Length: 206
Image (cartoon, rainbow, N blue to C red; front, top):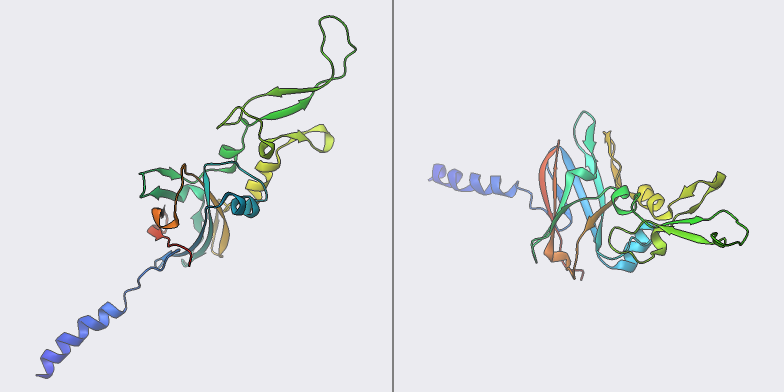
């Protein structure tokens, strides 16, 4: 009778040790991930410090390595999947959102007015990746020393999840292109890197 009781209790004890991932969390013996999904455009603008335009979602990701050696981590390790319509995309680098293809504003050199010349004024060159309409969030202006600067690119780089090897916890933003109206429960973030493969689900805010 005692032997039968032991055989019954032991599997229950083993089941109790299994860890069920919580919404916005995933982990294993090598890495721990905690993510916060940002869908509202105003909240995305606030998180970045600039407006990237429509068609993006942001994940605030905190990464804690648990290995004895430095772990390579970066945006390329993360993919987002929409269960609503099958959209799937890897995290974008800042330059892919606000790179050389964005709207550039330059001041034309001063010229005297005469036939065949133009008045001093702004010249527009290039278009945004998503639209040819001017977007103040991607406007480039002269910086110190007359060099052009891109405020959106600077903000994206400053807040992005670093691409580096580390043994210490790091955090930052992941930028994903997603079109249409999406709810948190529609999305899954997949980590696939040196620490293994993990799936992160989300739930509606209460």
